[in-house]
Image 1 (cartoon, rainbow, N blue to C red):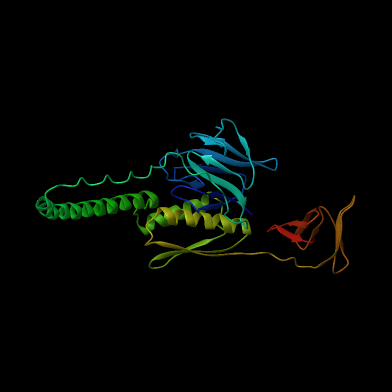
Image 2 (tube, rainbow, N blue to C red):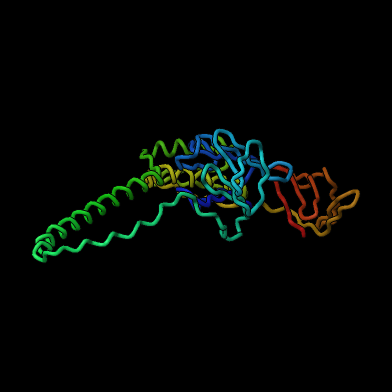
Amino acid sequence: MIELRVLSGLHQGAALPLYGSSWTIGNGEENDLYLSDPQISASHCRLFYEHNTWWIQPVEGEVSQSNGAQIAMPAQLLLGHYFFVGDLALCLDAAENLWDYKIPAAEGSPASAAPPLPMTETKNSHQKKNKTGLGLLAIVALVLFFTLNSLLITKENVAAGQRIIPVNKTDTEDRLRKQLRDQGLTLRVSVNKSANELIVKGNLSKEEFFIVQRIINKIQQEKDPRYQIKNETRIYQPELPFRIVQISQGSTPNIVTDTGQRIFIGDEIAGLRLMAITNTQVEFAGDESIKVNWQ
């Protein structure tokens, strides 16, 4: 499985599993990858997969290669190579790969503070003693000032990074149901309510499972954490009602079942139509799509 990883910014460490063929990135809630960093536009750019190649296309914001070269037209992306969306570093990579990327340090980092100037010596020791009390008071005042200032800055940064929007549980449920409906999953899952949480249940394909997980994660990041959404869906792998004992490819691909019946492409058996035989899978279509690995 390939995922889109966020390597810097307020959402550093976030990863979006990539199922489908097109994904949007931006500062708007409707995007597949939501980034609240101030330099990100509402509809910043679009990622898509076409002709076995990953592409990135700017929409409202700037996108650039790892060397800083601006991207104006759709540009090809390579797995394991980072690129920039605004000032944020992103990367496409396999989910099983380690997060081991060397991103150059941002320019313009504040210079180290200059060493304090030496105190001028006074000739009158009595004056020194009189000034000691004033010096101590000044130090205490400075310590208090910087402590309060640091607390205020920390509070502002946390608020900017989390972007919590207080809502009630009804709003959360409506939003969840809408996104499930938009993905065509209304008949595949159920949403049940309890005192402090919404519970999502259903038997799903692997792709559907990760779509539901992505929807839940996105809503939980944006909404009041007092209202939790619990994902109790599971990946369901349907089984064939018969056993395959022989697989042939060649000019007339076919299979042989445990009852000795030979099935060709397009033939039906037990309500399932044999659709394809590839180098790794046998594919059937019916009420549910079934793929059987054979190599």
